[in-house]
Length: 254
Image 1 (cartoon, rainbow, N blue to C red):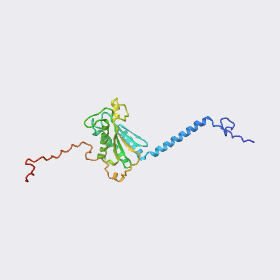
Image 2: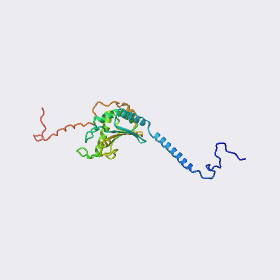
Image 3: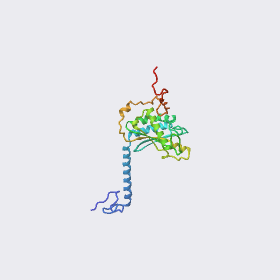
Image 4: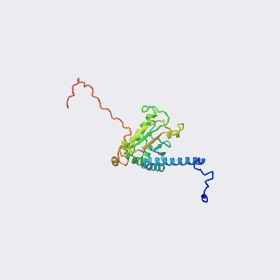
C-alpha cells in the first residue's frame, strides 16, 4: 500500500515538485542566486569590519561630534585604508595667508579642537597631511604653481601639529596635490572654497615605529612657545674682514 502524503503536504506527483533526475524548477535558479549574493554581502561586511581598527572608528565618532558641536566646516570618512578628516574653508575665512603657506588663526582654532582626538591615534598609526588648492593659478617669488603651494601648506600644518601640539614627527608626513583632486566645480567661489581644503589621513595599519613610551612623555596641552612655522627673520651675516690699511700687518694691541 503506497504511503500517502500528510495533510497539507504537496503530493509528489504535483508538477511543482522536482522529481529525482529531472531539472529543478525555474524559480529555484533565482532563489539560489539570491542566497549566494546574501552570503557574499555578509562576508564582505565581516571582512570590512575586521579590517577597520576599533581605535580609528572611535576617533571618527569623536571627531564627528566635535565637528557638529563646534560647527566646523568639514567631514569624516572611514574605510579599510584608514580615517580621513577634511577641513574646508567657510564664510570667507582662510586657512592660509593669500598666496603664501603661513597658517592663520582660523585653522589653528580648528586644530585646537581636533588635535586631542587625532593625537591619541598616533601611538600606533601614522598621519599624513594633504594639501589641496583651487584652479586659480599662482606665480610669485615663492611658488611657481599650485602644486608647490599645496605641498608647502601641508608642511606648515604638519609643523604646527609638531611644534605647538606635540605631535610626534616620526608619525607625521605631508603631501600636496595642488588642484588635481577637486571635490567641487571651480567656477564658483563656494566651489573653490571647498577645493581649498586640508585633509588629515590616519592610516588604519599599525605603524612600524613603536612610540608608546615616547608619547607618554609628550605634552598634552599646546606649547607656550611660538611655533617654528612662523617666519623668523634671518640674522645679519657676520662682517667679513677686509685688508688692513697698513699692508696686512696685524693691528696693534690696546
